[in-house]
Length: 288
Image (cartoon, rainbow, N blue to C red; front, side, top):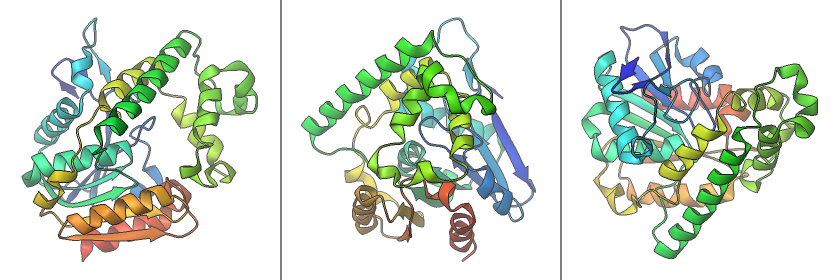
């Protein structure tokens, strides 16, 4: 779907006549992020998943992509225009990590577009300015690293994953990324190779643009706006990701119609580790 100078990739599953759910992926994800969850929920809802700017198959159709389009405000505006074109508003919203931060922004500034909102492993930003600037510096350095590997990046097939660490700098980067403590035991999950393969479909150059403009270090804090949210909200965090358990406990205290669900034996990415349970939590929330 074309919106301004961009082609947005999306998929639609389920019955178009049923209430809609918009799914927003996290950093390095794409519209297939929630496939296992959508397989369940599409029996009851019209499920729409998109590739956000900088991810998957969403691309600029002009010669030069303007980085100003990758900011939180611009990305949110693109999402709203997409919903307008698909005539799906108001819809439910399910979002993960980076997509969860975007979902909070959308809920605050476009509340009439959404019914119920489910956010997994997301933050409302950094209140302390020095902490934000420090994170921004980290994000910019990481973006530069992604840009440097762009010329060396080459998509590879799933059977080649065993040797990726030696042949593909982006794959080596992914292996390092998922060693972060917030992900718990994610790398031991039997489907982890498939997750890596999905992430490898991204362009490091496009990810760098996203990270510089939509990263946690660049976005404004939304903590002072959480009290304005009237939409019913489900907050989901993994038991092994104590950092985001604590963050979401604080969000739950400020969003008046919110509920926090902590998923046992999971890290940051609960919908990947336990998709059936995650889908059931979402279904219970949306139907009650």
